[in-house]
Image (cartoon, rainbow, N blue to C red; front, top):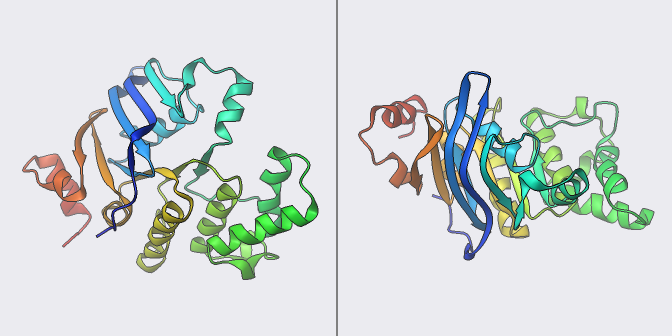
Length: 256
């Protein structure tokens, strides 16, 4: 069971009300309400195609909502201009499902890139120190001069998280962090997510359909069914249900 984090329920980091999103005739989100607090790991559970990834893309301004309010760190995302949106995104770390590393760059160059692009007037010494710290945070200092093709899937995930952490984001968005990984490597990534939360006091949304990931990392679970959050609470509270769709989700994941 996940150790309880220090969550500040007086500090609402993300505030979503009445969020709706459709793609043509397909309605994905049907009036979503959600609060996320400082220091919290919130897991969003749902089957493929239920709108989990759409939700975090709207939060980060990569997609625009059809209706509703999405406030992130006090900013109404839908009203921000491009410059304001870029400034907000610097406070949001996005860990992509495929790690999104540049194959032609070394690990060092992959981590250097967001620093050079987003933080001006850093000395070479400051850049080196930031890269070394980020790699230490994910336990991969030895990979600094390697190419992504030389790394395992789990290592690429870790480097992707390191590249996100290097800008010291207040919010972390993890999109299917354990997808395609073996159970041992998945456990390492889950532990890393908790370590990031404890070490950096980040607020995180973890998108997954992996119940082991949800149980290990989530302070709170929100289950997305039919475009709305039908159940919220601890892992035990969410799955203390006789509803057939909830039971099927649990049984599919083979949790004892």
